[in-house]
Image 1 (cartoon, rainbow, N blue to C red):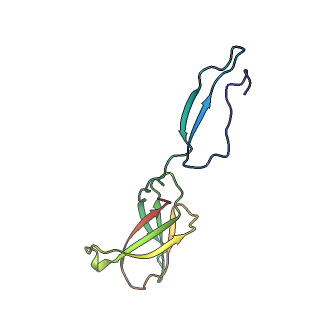
Image 2: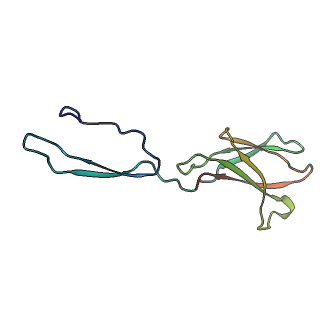
Length: 132
């Protein structure tokens, strides 16, 4: 940097990596004291928060559309959605089964759940998954 510059941009940083930057000034007398600063290049991801306002639409014999408001993504992209279900008549049971996984899902507020059984009532829950 020159004496007239007061900022610079450092590119090509690796995500989730700690960096230490050191700087000092130079004059005709020599170098001044080194000042250092350590930063984290991005916020570490955490588990995402479940979506809210779930609603069911477009009910078909073998599929339904779940509409929802996404929760906090945990500082990372959602890589898939897991739909777990219980048969409605067993709704007080503690066991949930994965009935559908949506991978490479691009729509952020709806998911079509396939492979359902006709004339069967389900209790569903939607789980977001990120890199954590």
